Length: 499
Ligand code: PHE
Image (cartoon, rainbow, N blue to C red):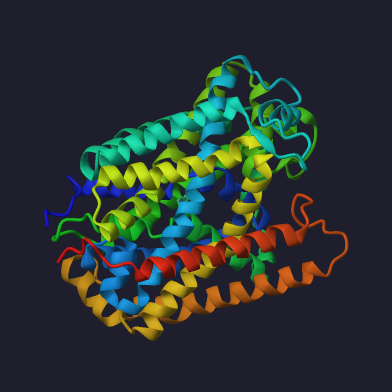
């Protein structure tokens, strides 16, 4: 067995981990989530979630990868034969995420080009749905849309090309270029946004604390959900990346750096987005809460409108914004794709090149489904479901198995402390063994309750007007399928089990 691939430098690992964490979620999910959940007061549950779940889980996942030196499935298999399925389940969910995440990056790529002549015109919603996605009739599926297909091919060529070159020459190098570029571009955009006329109104709306909000359980659930998704926790990613750490590497300090960098970026995004929304509201003579949006609507409908109104250089700023989405997205897509590339390469004993070609190739082919007319409906449903249930469910299974069933926390604490500057103590075990399982358990319970209730509502008006049954059934179908595939993989014999 040849030596395991490794990061070239500590900074390389940190950049890659931050690159995975900083993604579309930071830019378009965090600002609206914070605003809707108490504004300035949201920072209390958010910081609490970061410190009691986000960073402790990062430390846990870094420890697992570093200790067992394997992809998530291999690491779980080494922990206990019986828990290998968890690794595969995470990997299959990651596979599913990669099939739609790639498509959003492709849209952003198109939009970075559209920026130059403000191609989207004044009806940005009509342009997105009708002209670009060609999904005007939501019931209609079928037919690839060339405008999505071409950038999607580029997205996959870049991602698979990077993975093909391996950990140090591929992933590390790409992040060394993408992340500093992203930070520079983003700072330019944020400075522009907060100096727009009316930006102050946006910032005021964003930071204005509503302390009443944080007495509601929903706000705490939102904070935990945001932290998990944003830090790419429980998706096999951080385990895979830390499995490439050299033997003598810090774990705990690296986890703190990754966690705080990600949150800083998120905060910066909130400031930039709300500066721009304040400008928009001022231009339109309305209040900021009239124009707030998150997700696809924010990035592809509201922001193009704002860019239209820019006093100068609108094309350039539009390009920079969408380029930052592309860079943030690509570094996350690379990380999520690496989870299954490494997983199948180790399981089947095939080369990285073959794993990239078959695993990545299959994801690329499946992603075409979302590049069809009306494919946005699948994409929206998948994204909604993963954000609602996926994160909480996988995180819960992970902590409960490790802390309660396998009782591994003492082992892992020792391992982390043997290599790290910062030592973890009882608080770490309390966070992982008690606080996180309780919060995630409550989160699952609450989600089930709400969704069951919705099934009995008659107006079906909960999410973009889709029938609830459509999202829920398909979502659970895919989640169950992912689990079944995971269990099947567990019964295949390891062809390449190092150590
Ligand atoms: N952390 C990324 C973000 O904030 C999203 C992501 C989640 C990427 C899971 C890969 C896997 O957008």
